[in-house]
Image 1 (spheres, one colour):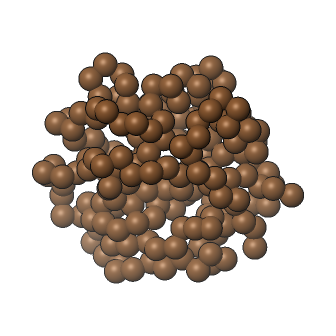
Image 2 (cartoon, helix red, strand yellow):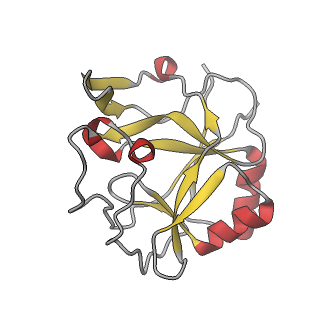
Image 3 (tube, helix red, strand yellow):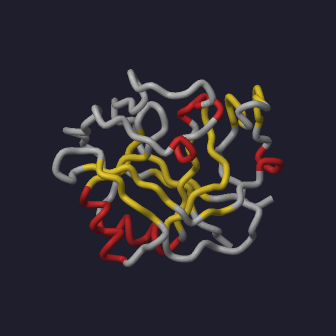
Length: 181
């Protein structure tokens, strides 16, 4: 039984937090809890429909946004990060519980005052606690992975969503099967 897929894309050669003031606890947070974009960064000339900044922001094209809207996918928002609505920070609100023990995820340098880890390492392959297949739609893990303020969740899709994305031609998205312990 296939549970679904984690999805990923290439780096897009942008950095959101470069030259952007963050508080000293930011390195123990993730892009969702920081929940800020650098208004001076304007995304242009990205040739991917689904990509990531070097500091963990998932950036999607207007074509992928239109696809999600046409399919009626909810629990997501698109924050415009370009002039004219060409590119968006994709924020997914439907959460799936990640199984850190099964994956062997490491949590490094906890800071009590900031209530967070400096690094969370070990995201792939994705292991989930729930053993049932994901429904058609987009999801994210409850944990965010990476280093410092660039920690980001893993994005997930159900089997039907993968089929639809491939049928439409979003060929710059990579898929990896979700695992269950």
